[in-house]
Length: 149
Image 1 (cartoon, rainbow, N blue to C red):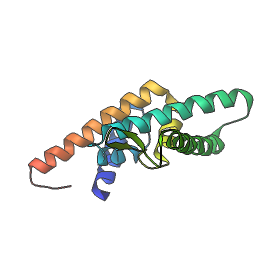
Image 2 (cartoon, rainbow, N blue to C red):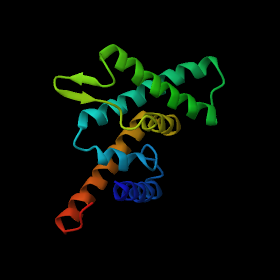
Image 3 (cartoon, rainbow, N blue to C red):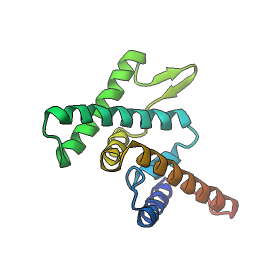
């Protein structure tokens, strides 16, 4: 797991240096790749981030929300949205058939949403998908070469 996070950070930094676009935070791609076998969980995390982004955007029309306050608010709203969806759809995970869906880490959605504020929903989402794909490709190539992550 630690290797995935380090690889994700390295690829994120290289991607940022080449494109000047942050892929949802430095640690997020590594965490996403750790859950690559659970695509619904990845999509759910991204949807929570998008919802939190739009809620805070609406709140910022009424209140002064910027900097650290905005970041904390995004994390709190992401967590609150997840809790609300859990209460609506059951227990502590959203169940679709026999598949349990939850967010990837409780702060990841807030980190992604914070990056959406800085550069937009589309740029952040696409860059995150690209970097996750690159990290997964590197993991597969390393696995084929005999280096197991």
